[in-house]
Image (cartoon, rainbow, N blue to C red; front, side):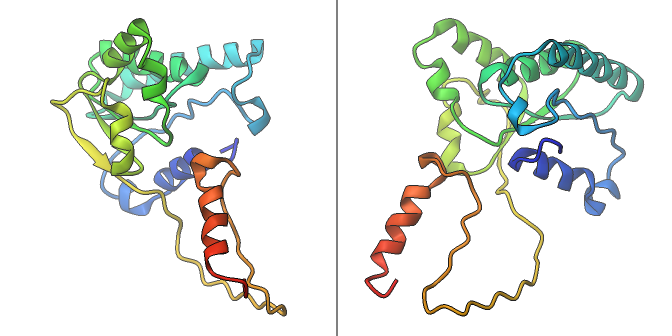
Length: 200
């Protein structure tokens, strides 16, 4: 981060992980051309320039550092996918062994009725291992991922924190930490609360 969202916070936790950094020699490059959430998904000349700089940095660092593995957070669709996929494919041409970390879904919807996009996605996922948030999301990639490669489930999480919360109300208070969209489970959350009965 910035911008602050789920994937960028996971990336930060990896970058700052003592466990990881004590076991591998690594270099980190921020491949996001956006600095604010409001910039995500929007075209601008500044972002085009930033993307060109990011691609140059990735190639330069790969050739200088010669890593055994390239780890990349790949956006599953939209303009960010094309940028991420372009970087990944370029590094693969240069000989990179790669692992993709996905933080969202939507690949199946993009490729199901489009032969050209399906072909492109298959090339992107060819010869790369994949990390996804849940086994329930593996099916989203069923038409494109390389069966000869490995698939890993790594759930998102946060560090343990002890927080004492005191409510002066008899009404239970819930803290919902996600986007208010159906795919994030907001409607299921509300339905579950209703099932608790009239006291809630």
